[in-house]
Image (spheres, one colour):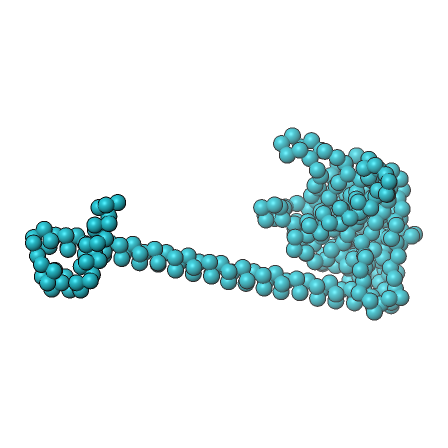
Length: 338
């Protein structure tokens, strides 16, 4: 049975790609089922045999009282019943070398799962899920394509997984939008993974009937939209959200300028290296030209000597000084001895 669409202005809903709004909805104490559904959809999308029935969010709170302080920890940390730790991060803007940030997050959390005095076998698996608005790059600096990529520790040739201690999931919402993945609702072929990504990117989807249809047909999406509508109507949450949006945009602008500056520096260094190379090549060419000129002059002097020409005649014919004549002949003598 379809639910009626309430008087919700979907254009006025806060963007869930802003981490403050994302955590405000998915880490709230009463919204555990939303996070469970999202995680199960992500794992099912990669055919991972893991079904979450319960979890505990260890950092559910957003400090609304410190609105004058820059927000810091806005990721979500959840622990499953088997003590597996999951870190979920939402990133509206791309971060250069994002993979290193993820590795740092994983390493920090992984090392914290063991207590002093315990053996290394007590370390718990850590899963990092990054919802990003762009692609990451591989070791050769090439963009990694795909909406959902998964990395683990495995043997290079056989692909045998060394340990289940690490899973790094990257969900590229930007790729989902460019692929128009949300259009699969037209033939009723949309899986839960795509439904969640449609909700996350709905601010960029012009046709709001898509999200309205999901609202009517999918109970968990309805629950999420209702929670987001309440969150969006709260004046304090909306104020902090806008401030966080400004922070993200400023950080993105600074990052873009930094990247441009680093690119200009690299280009300038490359130009300097090219100029140095050109100077070295010019010096080499000049040296070779001088060597050829010296050899030509030496042959001329030796040829005149064979004709018994005096120094005065050689000087007059070649237009060089007596010192130069002696110098060339001395060079010829050294060369023969060598």
